[in-house]
Image 1 (spheres, rainbow, N blue to C red):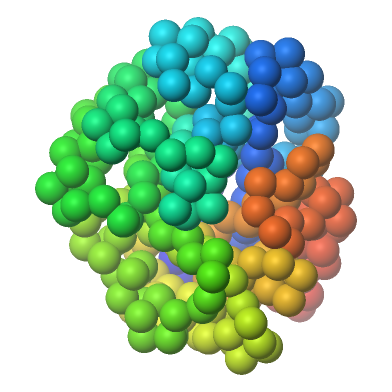
Image 2 (cartoon, helix red, strand yellow):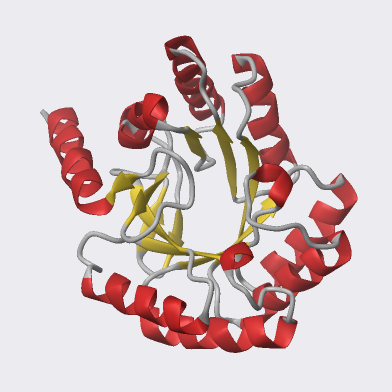
Length: 258
């Protein structure tokens, strides 16, 4: 059985994949409205990801920290993932590398987030340093890789996930874009191989767009521990509406118990 990490009573890595909803508001008002909508739908939401790159004030550290505190208060018991997704990996904007790490360090030290997403495209030494800060402050680190152009080979995807684990990531993550059904199969096969080789480590994997939607639904079968669903606006192609996602995950879960 896979091991798991516990974040605010949510066990990531065991049972049904946890549903994470992105917050993509560009203004404070937008974000507060999203937080309220999530609060009203918390029966179908397990986790929340703040995609800071969507926020108009993301390059003002003090403003980000102020908004973060407000968001966290509204979300109450739901685990919060802090993510600035770079333009290179499908995000909304690019920022200087030094500010990227300053931003994530401030989030980790704030006490207002539970998990911090760090992109694997950075140097090992920089990842090691920020992970140390994340762990010293009692938070968890997601080490992620996103390819919006194609799907690497199965072996390459396993290699990327392995690197995330080797560097000390609590949850290695990979998201890729399929160009064929076989690409989706390659992602699922990489997921199974990683889960079998490292059952002690929760992972997140997904094949994007409509063609890859099956990967967002079948995590409990293949070994992905978190799936991202859309409540208001999707943050990546192929995200399934959360109510449909919850229902499908439960059907699969009950089937596996028979």
